Image (cartoon, rainbow, N blue to C red):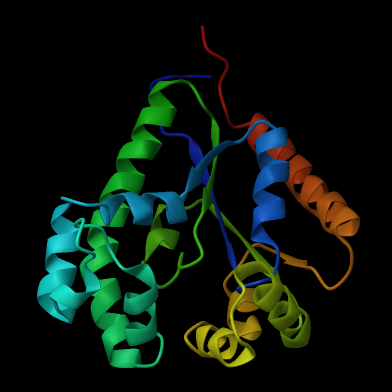
Length: 213
């Protein structure tokens, strides 16, 4: 790939419990570099990070464990039951997250990657969609997502529903995405759909990415 240009960035987002993890894995297998915004969000809130200091000032020192790390469960219980506090949390964290995402895009582009998948549950909320050339959303019916979330995260139905309430509707994702992958069936079918979308994107951009000379 040409190391003098920015890689094309494909945003991956969608509803909780819809199946983004499987889609991201397929794109990695298809040769896309992966940026996981969840990992970055955890990194910016690690012990000693300035973001964590701001969070403690905003939500109280009780959200910090004795060892200086973040009590994620307590913070979650605070923000997921109060929209205003969730917006406050986002306003603190997103600038740190976006900065690291931009740096990572630059690094991967310099390494010669032509296609990057930005896996970001809050792609639109953080305005990270502005960094993307295309956007993929993964959706599923609420009852199916609810069952998956309860099983995956070992939380109550009420807690899962509170999480859903803080997110955009399926119609929003459909109207703001270039590709929508519906995942109401098996993981095998989801994998096939994801591979089909990955192949279409690679075919489209292969003609646009100049070979390295």
